[in-house]
Length: 157
Image (cartoon, rainbow, N blue to C red):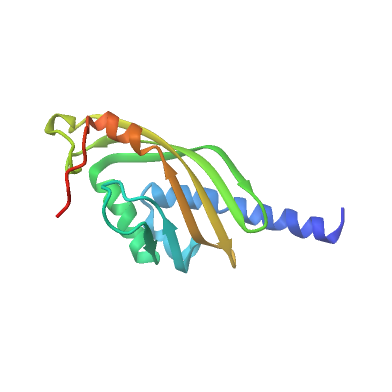
């Protein structure tokens, strides 16, 4: 094997090693943030409520996002179903999440509280200097809404 191929394999292995701490961070272990997330981290995700920015910038904003999801879904747990799939600067994982809805999501009826929710998604991440630097989220929001019984997101004003 050539030196270039060895270097590529090493980079792929290092990138793949970030999958577990990424999952663990989403499972609520925010102590991992400084270890695996770049200071200038940027996430691209459509806001579930239809309002707000489609970008989340920085470690603190990521932690607030993760904490916010855990605030509405108790015992939330993510598992990786496919991957990680890596190249020299990217990682992709397919995941499934399950939690119990606590209430508080705009448009969700009160009777949705205590309902188990399961949804899936695919994360594409860019890696720079051994840390996760950029994230494109693709989650099945429609399935999430259907399980909560949401028919329409209330207008934000």
